[in-house]
Amino acid sequence: MISHLTLNLIFILLLLIGYLISHYKKKYEYWKSLGIPYVGISGDLTFQPKTNRNVTIQEQYKKLAAHPFGGIYDGAKPVLLIRDPELIRAILIKDFSHFTDRGIVVNEEIDPLNAHLITLQGQRWRNIRIKLVPTFSSGKLRAMYPLMEQCTKVLDGYLDAKLKSSPELEVGDLMMRFAADVIGVCALGLDCHAIADEESEFRAAGRRMKPLKWKFFVRQVLRSIHPKIIPWLRWKATDRKAEDFFMGVTREAIKHREENQDKRTDFMQLLINLQHEEQKTLQDGAEPLFTDHVVAAHVMIFFLAGFETVSSAVSSCLYELALNPSIANKLHAEIERVLAAHGGKLDYDSLKEMHYMGTGHCLRRNSAQIPKYRIFEKNMHEGIRNSELISPHQRRHQCSYSNL
Image (cartoon, rainbow, N blue to C red):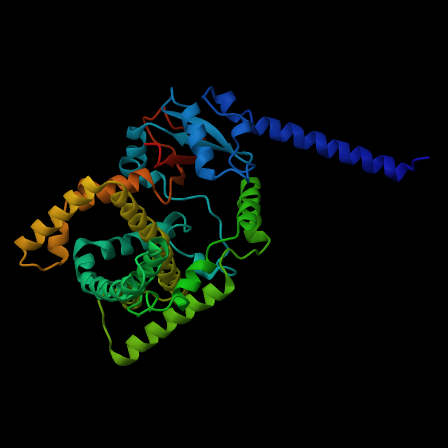
């Protein structure tokens, strides 16, 4: 016979199952209850581990073709997928102040290098962003150009030597190493030697930061259930060795420059300057924005954000040029014309004049066709007045680059 204890446990289990079914049924009726067009549970972003997330988004985007926006689900979380370009423009420009957060909850005690603009929220995000925006002005980029030029000379030398021994070259791998050198010298003022050394520490750190597929899937599932589960479990998002590497490099760079009065024009120097300016004006008891770990976090994200994006953009553009000789010839003619006008000198100003290569066609078109990051997410933290399209209750929003 079944004991009373067993019967009670079965009864409790059935109640729990019934509650979960009712709870999630209500969750998955969210968009229906608002009368907003939606893609049902079959298109759930989280529970399709064998399907590329970008492919799933593209399928949902097509299903909502008749609407400017529509509802989708990431686990049990409702997400508003924005299709209309004007709405996307409003989110990114006009109503940008309403969309500051990405809904990523981090524990800085466990993951100190997650304290960067992608994960920070609210007023702290605003304060740091205001300080960082001027560091990406055209004047600052112009000052970094000589640093990039050094890397291109190393690349030229490597290509000359390599092509003498073999007519074939793995462009994707080489562009990753080139990107590591460029970002290393622009972010930290350090020579990474990634082009010459295939096993350089910077490149290894970049590889370690890419999560394994199963870990990424588990994190997505837990995040879809509740964003605070991962910090509560004290599960590190950053690889320990990569974290130690970036923290060590940042502290050494700060120490070296302060002791030797070594001021440069790279991103690290801009962050150090912000640290010093803040220390002069910081009131007693106030919490500093730019601690060493916040500086290291932004150095790391600067490196990672450019490591794969730059390499994939350049290598895929070179591939497209190889497939389309007419475009390659037109680009070559533009380069020759601009260089002739500048006395054969390739600098920041001459590059700006190569419109066909940049904003006019090649890189711009290639980036639109094969974007590294195809979607972006924003959480709306407050309602927008005079807007019937996006209500305060629809907090999480996704826009797709690749489908515009």
